Length: 330
Image (cartoon, rainbow, N blue to C red):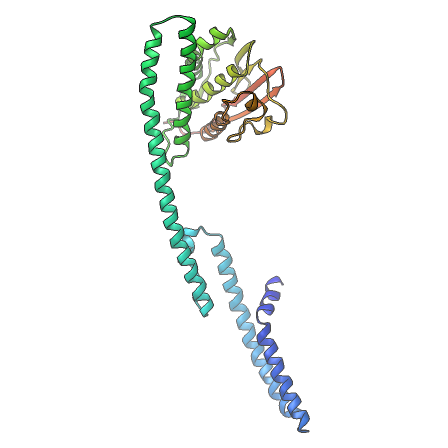
């Protein structure tokens, strides 16, 4: 019914002209006292002919409307060559305008893609190059055991994390990935992550509670290691004193608990959003709101789940569901 109303509105001028012509004929015959039947019969015949033509026109317009509706569901790249045949000058003009806009869009998209690739290439090269002086500083600090050296080693670990976050961010935005999905010993991944932060645990006197899980998970070892390292880094960052606990819950759910400052209830639903730092971010100016966002993206790509619960002043628990990794083993 909506289509028919729109059709009548579109053809209202033609209908008005036809009725006006009939009125002119009736008025003329009435003024000259001619038999009105002489104009009534031709008018009725014309009306029947116009009605039949209108039925065909309505059907044609309906088909064209459906074609355009189906085209509207296509992407812009597929839209250009599937338009209905041009029946009017307006059709030709509109299709010409659309083609010109598509050409401009392709040109702009090409320019943006080129700029994006240049940016990605630059930061990828920078991230790899910066690893060389970082490794050199790491070797230098290994030869010295002092409070100052341990503090610098902890800061250097944070720099390494930030560089790794840059690479992960770039790789997640890339069309290609380097996921290698296989059965991995979860304890090997956890021990490697814990070892990186051993100095910070000791230096800050944060107690680590960890018992071997004896679990094998289907995942990518490198990417899951990044997630666990990021969660441990956050736990240490927001735990002035107390402990960090790593344990398994039923259904292959890995839990990382801390006794830190916790997360405000209004912030908790948004901590995995890109760039969101919440109240804790205003306390710690270094927070970027990228770490947990990357963790969520990686877990989703690996088929894992990640969630959080927290009580302000009592600590935070992050859970990674490893049972949902329904992925192909390589």
